[in-house]
Length: 343
Image (cartoon, rainbow, N blue to C red):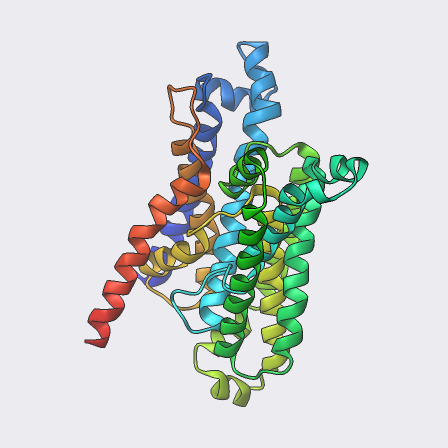
């Protein structure tokens, strides 16, 4: 079997697998709905029970779409970072965007006691939290971009991103120290991540942000393949390195920032999924890795979300905890594999 035929079969399998998991994800929850009814509801608008139809259209379907968008966005931003920084352990949060989003939300949730009552009631709403999270990510992005204009070394930018992350975490820690138990509880729930609280209008805004980020990523596929050969060799091929780096960082910022704003911080998907795609497709060609990483991201996020619902139970696990349980063993395996290669 040629490599092209093998890749075609793998892509078809991934698409079918994603569609099946999409239906399974919608069918699972505190109220179990047969997959046949889920399929009929989505294709014909008919369902055995009206309550099932209401649950599917207003709760399960937005959550399943959110899982696909979040999985695709985070995994692609991880792929972009790992290639740009030539570091297999780089992820979408290395630029401090997630920490910036956390700082914005922490100021809104934990700092409302220092604000007038009418202003705090506006900021504490769901849209206020999304706005604060987006603003926090954007301000960190501006700071990183400003510093990156002065630095030519991508590893230095990576370190700058980590330092911004440490700085924002320190401010969040200070705010939590002076907060009440109720404020801490609300901030903790946000930091655990949640795909189930998104309305259709939120899904529409998130889709636009993810669409812009993925479009910029598609334009970066050729530069990413050139960067595999090294910065100097890529420049000798005619690559405008600074422009390519700026587009990659901007795409990652849009993807990771918007996802954190709407779904909270979700760990390990961006770090682990690109490695799974590379392992299965056994290639470093980003023309193939881009689409395979995107599909694997959607599939793994649907699996994690299905597990978090604890089928047959009324309880729901935090999605961030499930992705961490899934991703941590992969990171450990990467470290061991890297050590063996060095040895």
